[in-house]
Length: 373
Image 1: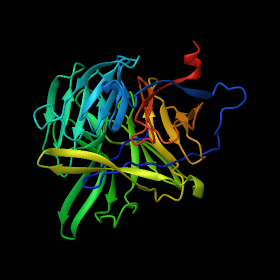
Image 2 (image 1 turned 90 degrees about the vertical axis):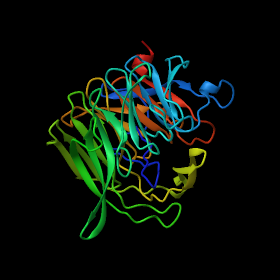
Image 3 (image 1 turned 45 degrees about the horizontal axis):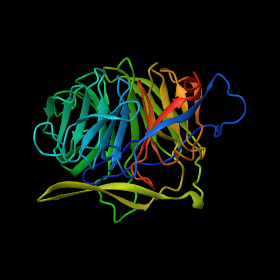
Image 4 (image 1 turned 120 degrees about the vertical axis):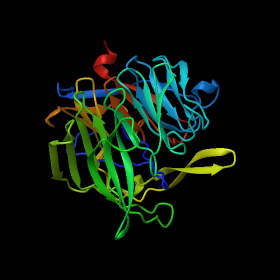
């Protein structure tokens, strides 16, 4: 559920860690409130079949059909694979024309099986039907199209966006979570956070901007989890934007051991005469403490999955829509998925690593009980 978070003009991958209580390993007999998550299969190779050689995976999601949609920034398209890992079709292609993409970084799966994809350089959102036929394009966004897309219905999205305004006190900016349909302005704003407009002085310089992830419930509720190293914050907003769930409590900060301090990747975009091109840059991660909640998703039962990182080993807390804890989900092979982004939606669970040490791949995940049936 970690997501590729990009902001114009700064593009970055938000990484971190989090957790509340220490539940970090699979050992002993699994209790009814414990779920074991295992790798069922992978899609992606280093060499060979070009359909399986990824460039930079920005997102991967299960579709209602059971197929897997993989958004590849370098290929400027969404590849759709069967559960067995065979490419069945491509949605979008590189270009500046209708339905074409230049630098796509966010993907939403629509309830009817279609897709919504943003294009940073094209400044647009593109809606496709399940076969990849263009249904609509929305343009006119400033300074950039919405990101971190989540579908509320086949024409409406919850999305993060940046607002820049000129006032008496100068230029101000904010990062906001809103609801978008067929207009470039949000229909509704759920939450907003002040954004620093100061540019970092160099690679690895952190930005003070707040970070959050969000997901849509089956009833249209939008859940927001803040990324923090000292707070557990979970909010829920109904269809009118009213706050219906509000959980906030302090958490002891957990320092990242020096031997575990690593790098983080950012996406840079170059625009030249031959078009726009994306590449990754790696620099030391400035974070000193583990993030509490890294990402959030909602499953087929409407339950909330929170990716917890501050215990030192990734796991998930599964909550009902009211915020009550139902279960803890543990990874059977946490080392293999250590630096992955996770995707949980009502159709399944995936993981992917945008900038791996070997080659990009998508992990198909399932719970151990399902795997043995």
